[in-house]
Length: 178
Image (cartoon, rainbow, N blue to C red):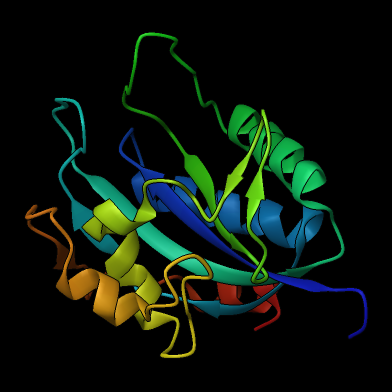
């Protein structure tokens, strides 16, 4: 469809019912951002950059949206807030939901509010592994490398596990219009 941008988002949760938080975020994304065309498997990973008792569940998805990058950021922050996300000025903390913009089409954006591609995605296996699930056609517009190539050279050595029993419910796929 004309006027739509394909965006790639990374979602993570490590508080309370992590699967439910991911599902609710996906539902709100479908309602407020656009149609989902691809979704990864769910992965479990340890917290990155801080200590926490509970591991994260992570996934990535592709949405088609007519929002601008700034509108998308505002919408994602509103969804995070609606789902109980608390922000900290002192660094990383556990959260009900975290939604990051990894790619916004093939655009490279650097502003006071937003950097796209996400500035740290290349160093985080919890983003790269789900990105690989989305297909071989994803190319980093900065390095021009495939996600698989970036994953192979990733300095993050954290364990990452596919949650085979944690597949988004069929009704979630219907909500997302895949």
